[in-house]
Image (tube, rainbow, N blue to C red; front, side, top):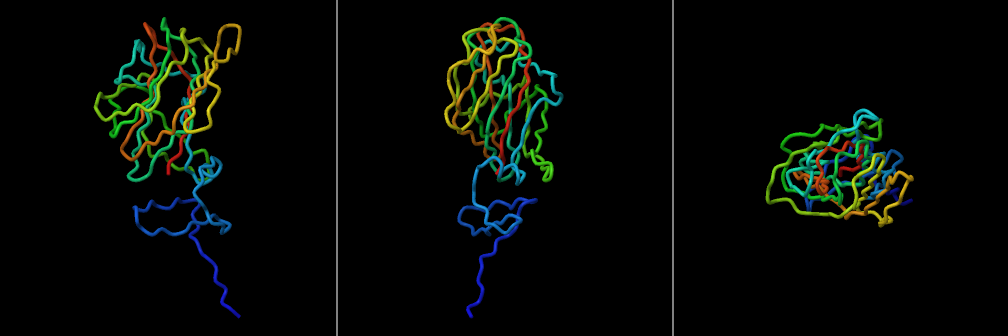
Length: 241
């Protein structure tokens, strides 16, 4: 009788394997049932292995103020900052959802810009956010620095613009929703009125955003003639691999 020859892979569910350099041989990986794990960005798989994280306001219902005088594009002002502190893994943006709780003063032509720098650019300001692993069983700590609000970043030459555009032509309204997705099928680009009070739901499809080790992403919002800070509830999803 021929010998029973079966492929064996290393079980890695509660602890993720380390990364391998280009050209190096890597072990096959199995789940707890012995099934071979193939690379798949399905969010349920990422969540189960402890690679998916969510960042949001620490206290539900308590908004965070942005820059008061964000009256034009400025690469030293950001609303959301995410820096990758891992030595070898990459951070992949999934979505960013913003809800207006205080509209701010004045401001028209509400717009945004997203850039990635090859270095940490956070200088000061904003509220420090601790992202959470959506799988409480693995309960990993996200290898990132995260700030939201009136964030001040350094001006440099390493930032590359990844996405930008206009969101509305009028001042923000309390209850506005802005949803940004990254590397996903295109969303409806039109603004949908939610209520007679001119609340809007704005969806934007952005390109995939990869934040390599020691790099940082900044999401910047700005308006024409804004003179008072808007306040926000937010939620951001990303994974680390």
